[in-house]
Amino acid sequence: MSRNPRKAGRLVVVSNRVALPRQTATGGLASAMRAALQERGGLWFGWSGKCSARSAEELHRLTDGPIDYVTVDLSRADHDDFYAGFANRTLWPLFHYRPDLVDYQRSHLEGYLRVNAIYADQLVKLLEPDDVIWVHDYHLIPLAAMLRERGVRNRIGFFLHTPLPAAALLIALPRHRELLETLASYDLVGLHTARDLRALEDYFLHEVGGAMRPGGRLRAANGRLFRAGVFPISIDTAEVAATARNATAEEGVRELYDSLDGRDLIIGVDRLDYSKGLAERFEAYAHLLERVPELHRHVTFLQIAPPSRGAVPEYRQIRRELERSAGHINGKFATPEWVPIRYVNQSFPHRLLAGYYRVARVGLVTPLRDGMNLVAKEYVACQDPKNPGVLVLSRFAGAAQELTEALLVNPADTAEVSDALERALKMPQRERIARWRSMMDVLERHDITAWRNAFLHALAG
Ligand code: GDG
Image (cartoon, rainbow, N blue to C red; front, side, top):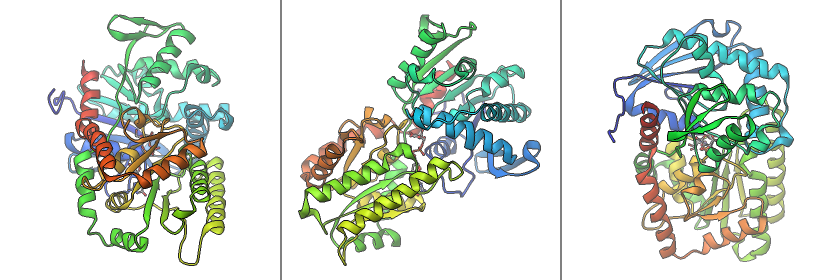
């Protein structure tokens, strides 16, 4: 396969959030798409991240190296209904198996459809006939259908960065057909894992009367044919590994290392989100300290959790809960010279994070549900080959399908996570090297370029 399939057609990436040059990208989608566009170049279209009264009338344009960025502002009402409303209070919890947190409001769905129509109106003006369009994530499910209504005939692919839950959950969403059947307007729908693909097929075959056609194509009830496939997202493995090698000389990394004073470091890095299992993780760490007193003063847990989606009440709630929990654990176990949890609500430049990962003996990645989880992959890529750390990973992260040599756990099982932490901290070097090597092989073979090329190749086919 060539490194750049369909070099002729410009690549147009559409995602709600666009990671503009020199902005820290703290989300998985932003990190991945920046790496995917860097090499091939193209246009990246989406929301500017700003709300203004002028709304989407005006396009902001910026070119940086091979990437042209075009963004629009949203009105406050559009932002609240579409982004803070339907996308993040309805679809996000539903897709992460949290129907208890789903807050459905018709006005939010209408705002969601309205913003997708705004994006479609603006995007048609920018398109050229041989552009290949790649739409991302749950914010933009109906975009292709709206582009098709406006006469767009280009190839359009869609990638879902979250899990897709079982059909039994999807049908709980009011007007689910109206939304989900628009997926058939794409030429290709990409998902992270075989489980997500099964959910999609099951939904189309058994809930809405579609059919499977030869060549693996799905036929929607309205007769449209589209393909769906598994494309596990990845990282720029060589670049992340090189960043980590160089980061050990960084002042901030040295400061962290010195502050440990010989203690083993456990690290967690997550957007502050209830899907990431942080409350359960804190509890498992407390269980470890309770159960294995010999670890007291010999281990430190650093949890980095930059706040996200602060406009959504559930995110303010989880933040309060974690502050309480971290305070409680430190109050219970700390000594004058040792703080068991360092809980930091702040984001850090990638090169510092890479160095922190390398210093850490254990990477603790325990989401309750996660489409993929790039932190797990970054942690592995950042290790020192001669003395690598151990990844403790939730079975419910898409990454667990590939990183099978991690210590795999059910994040809700406090005792299991606590056992895995103890095992990771005590694991002999030989076993650590063997496990790391096998995971690193996967990441070297399957990096972000391979992911992008596999998707675009399938979309072109
Ligand atoms: C969604 C899906 C899927 C985090 N803190 C900082 C920081 N980060 C970076 C990490 C990583 C990214 O953000 C987080 O990616 P994840 O994949 O772990 O999680 P989501 O944000 O939920 O991403 C997920 C992903 O999309 C891609 O498809 O894997 O399942 O939920 O790259 O390093 N980056 C910097 N400072 C931080 O403090 N610079």
